Every structure is written in structure tokens, then in C-alpha cells.
Amino acid sequence: MKALKLKRDDLYTYLESLKSYGELWGPVAKGEKYVYARLTNVRDVALGALRTIIPPKKFFVPPRFTMFRYTDDHYAESFDDVKPRVLFGLHPCDIHGLLILDELFLERFPDPYYKRRRDATAIVGLSCIPDDKCMARSTNTHAVEGGFDLAFNELGNNYLVWIGSSLGDDLVRLNLDLFSEDIEPEDLKTYLAWRRKRDSRYKLSFDLTGMPDIMELSWDSPMWNELAEKCLACGSCSMVCPTCNCYNVRDVSDLTLNSGVRERHWDSCMNKEYALVAGGHNFREARAERLKLWYTHKLKAFITEYGKPSCVGCGRCIDTCPVDINVAEVIRGLTGQKVTL
Amino acid sequence: MNNKPKVGFYSFSGCEGDLLTILHCEDELLDIFSAVDIRSFRMASSERHDDENLDIAFIEGSITTNKHVKKLKVIRERSKIVVALGTCACYGGPQSARLGYNDWEERFKKVYGSAKLTVAKPFESQPLDEFIKVDYRIPGCPIDKYQFFYALTRLAKGMPVELTKFPVCAECKWNENECLLLKGQLCLGPITAGGCNSRCPNHGLPCIGCWGPTDEANVASEINLLKEKDFSAEEIINKLRLFGGAGMVRRFGELLGIKPKEEKTLSKTQGVSKKKREKK
Ligand code: SF4
Ligand code: SF4
Ligand code: SF4
Ligand code: SF4
Image 1 (spheres, rainbow over the protein chains, first blue to last red):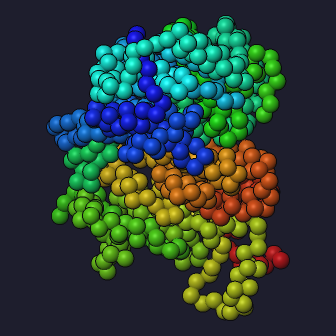
Image 2 (tube, rainbow over the protein chains, first blue to last red):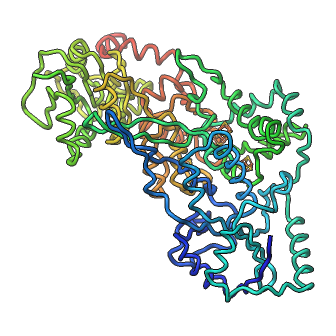
């Protein structure tokens, strides 16, 4: 991995250059929140944005999209909306979130819809200073060593720009004159000082070692019922979590009745019908069972299978759940600290 | 003439907004008419075949008189599948907002005085399923045309209809709206049936519950949450009842301050308000 420097003042010029690769997207303000949006004007980018309402998974698995169009005897997949894109401004937790989705959608059973979009997209990371809802340090997702093409790190009046792939190298070449290779000893000091500052800002800190065991032992904890009484089963937590990946499909017929489309849309295990099977049996009828599944997925099953939690500490569930059920509260509850609902 | 499913559209008390929604589908109207054999659609055509059997009856509006009940029962008998179209047919609509308070006669008198009623015997507005078996409900005030197309095509192919089970919040997140509830507004999104593409929050307006409650609405938690946000019980209950009608009263009556017992009396005296008057 190679590092270069870019003057802060040159950022906008460089962002403009990135457009020659494809559509440029980045975080922009929406009311008091942020969303990833097309950067027609590069100055719209919200450099101080922390979490966007929806994580960048929306670019690779859109909330709803058409998989294919069918007729009685034929079907044709639809990739019309897949075009070269640069996503600028992904924070480390979100890059880790994508790496988790990669494991699920590219490894054992590659998902062509995900893969096409992923292949067409360049990832440009951006460093961040956490707020009181970030917990990426606890999940060890506060820094990135891969999973990006370029990663920008704040460095005084400059950005330190890490090149993470050959595509990243090509992206730098879109405007090579803006970059310098002169990394000085002073830069290392500045970088280390910045890292210390970032690490000192985490207000949420948890020890997640042995979480699968703790989850197992808490299987019958009354906490689940207490949470379930509050939970609105709205599914928002799944929609905003960068690693939630469940979906449903449905066929929507044209009115002519002999053709139609297969649509795919996000689903959530918090939805009552999620575990409903033919014959009417529901494996997780009770809300408490569903909440348990959600958190088993984040804090137990994924660790057992992949050696890391599937929570990347982005804080979106903390920011989103209307009744304050979130990963921090659940970890507190599980580890014996009082749940403050 | 063909083996297309025979379909009828009917309307009781309501604004006819659901049937208008269908009529306004100018681009698709011809396809609708060729997908199914429409035997009755008063708003679209004066041609009616009110004596033959139907495969599917779409019925909008709530039931408010004894004549309605009679007509409704005949439609049921003639139809293999009955679909309640719109929130009035599904839950009673805004005209059922005071179900269970047992003050209908008082309100009726306030508006109509002691005028002699000769045309029909009126009673408090009720949804279709108070009187007949309803096979599917397509809620909405008015309905969403795509949800209607979806149901129509499924039924035309003899398949069951599965409509959106998520509350409004799911689609609201897909649309990346700032959450109005978190901003302190009285939003009913978490307990309201989705499928509307979170139309109101998309425009910065809180959800008023016009699609009725979800199957799993946690109304108790929603009420607590809104109280914590300093809304008064009255304000919350009025909002819940505005479109929730029978959907709210039957399932969450107690939370709304209605004793389940009164509720029973209500459904027994359904459409026979005379009995109730005699009792008094
Ligand atoms: S966001 Fe909160 S209320 Fe909604 S389903 Fe998730 S835990 Fe339940
Ligand atoms: S937590 Fe639930 S919605 Fe999220 S990925 Fe796991 S099963 Fe799916
Ligand atoms: S569980 Fe919460 S904090 Fe963790 S990744 Fe999901 S949304 Fe972010
Ligand atoms: S604005 Fe309303 S509908 Fe949208 S997420 Fe918030 S509570 Fe749900």
C-alpha cells in the first residue's frame, strides 16, 4: 500500500477529476442528517458527515430493484442502472461493512446483482473523528487496511492518500499533478497524533471478547422480553445496519398477465412474516425471539463463523431506533450493566 | 365470451377515492379492462350485470345503513372473492373514528335533528367485515394503484395476494427520510401498514395512519413513546382513531379507553340501533 499527499485545497479539484471515471457520489446534508447523493457539484460534499441515514450498502443491494423481466418462456436480467461510480467519503466502519457483505454476497454463492455493482464501483475512503454514538473501536473497525481503492486521511493541511488497489492507482493518475510523494518524518508525527485524537474520542467502549458465550448464556434472559415489549417491529434497525443483508423477492405481473418483473427488496428478521413458512408455522412468532435473532446475528453467529462480529460499530441503530433498542444497550444488558430504556 | 375472471366494483359510504384512483390510471385502464371482464363499475360505465355471479368483487366504502347491509350480503353471495378496497371498507374510515364511544345517536341528532328517515335505517359506520367475510384487504386513503394492480393480477391468475407487511417506517428508511418521530413529531409510521411508499414522510409530513394498523402494531409502545414526547393522551388517541376505526377499536380498544364489554354490545347491536333505543 502506497501513501501520497494531497493538499486540502486541492480536494475539490481532485473530486472533479474523479468524475471522468464515472458518477461521483458522496455524503451530503439532508436536514440534520446525511445521505449519499450524486455530487453534481463537488462542493455539496459534507466532509464532516459521520453516518448517513442508510449505509453504502444501498449502492450494491438497492432497497428495491428489478432483478429481471420475464415473459411466459423467457427472462432477461436487468442491469440498466449499473454504471461506473466513485463513492467518496466512506468511513472505516462502512468499508468494513462492505467487506462483510462481500463475504456474504461474493464468496460461497456469488450474487450477480451485487457483484456487477461492486465491480463497477470505486471506493474512496475518508477518515473521521467519532461522536458519542460511534463504537467502531470496540468492534475493531475504526481503521482500514483494505477494502478501498483510495483512502483519504486527514493530515493537517493535507490529506494522506492511501492507494489500496490498482484501480486506486489509476484514479490517482486521473490528476497526478495534484499528488506529492514527499512524506516527511513530520507527517508521521502528525498522523500518529491524529490517531490518538481519534481514539480518545470514543465515548462508547465495550469488551466484546467471548460475546458468543455470553449470548448463549443469556438465551433465557428476561431482557429479551423487556425489549420486545418496547420494540415496534418497525424494521428500521435492519434497514440502517450496514451488515443486514436479508431480502425478499416477489413477482409483479404486468396487467397483460403474460409478462412481468421479479423485484427484490430489503427484508428484516424483525418482520413477523420473516420466519413464516408454508403451512402457516412461524419459527419466530414472538418479538422477543426476533430481537434475539437480530442480536445473535450481530454478536454470536457471525463471530462463530467468521471470527468477528457483524456489528461494525457505525452507531446507526443507536441513531435510529425510536425506542432506543440498539447494539450498545443490548451489550450493556448482556454484560450485566443496567439497560436504560 | 371468454374465460377471464368476472369482476365487479362497488361503492358504499366514502368519497369514492379508491375507484377514482383506478379510473385515473389512464395509461393502464385499457389493460385492466382486457385483463379481467368488468361486469359492474358504476363510475366507468352504466352497463351493469347485477344478477350474475362474479369471480372477484372489489368493494370500497363503509356500511352505514340497513340497505347497505342487504346489498353487501347479495354481493358476497354472488362473489367467489371479496376484496375490501380502501380504508373505509377495511376499517370503517374516518367516519368510524368514534366507534365504541356509543355516542352515535347523539351525534346523528345534532346533525339531522329529529327528521323522519324514510329511505333507509342508518347506523354508525362499520367496515365490511362486520357483516360479511372479507377475503383480502387493500387499505389506503386512497389506495395505491400499484398495490391494486398487484392484487388484481395475482387474483386474475388465481393466486393468493400478499400485500406489504412492513410498517411505513421500512419504506421511509428506503427513501432515506429524516425520522420525524425522532424529531418529536406525532408520526404513526411504526404501527401503520406500509405500501404507500411513505408518501407523507417523503414530504416532511408525519404519518397519520391512513392505511390502518399493521398486523403486529405495538400500539402500547407507540402510545408510551408519544407520551414521553409530551403529546397528551387525548391527542394520541384521536390520531390513532382517525383512520384506525374498527382496526384500532377491535384490537386495541382497551388502550384507547374503551372497555371490551361495550365493544361486544356494539357489534351485537350492529345495524339494529332501534333495539338500543328501546332499551334506553
Ligand atoms: S428499530 Fe427499534 S423498534 Fe424498530 S424493529 Fe428495530 S429494535 Fe424494534
Ligand atoms: S439481523 Fe436479521 S435482518 Fe439483519 S442480516 Fe441478520 S437475519 Fe437479516
Ligand atoms: S448493529 Fe448498529 S452499530 Fe452495529 S453495525 Fe449495525 S447499525 Fe451499526
Ligand atoms: S418519519 Fe415516521 S414513518 Fe418515517 S421512520 Fe420516522 S416514525 Fe417511521
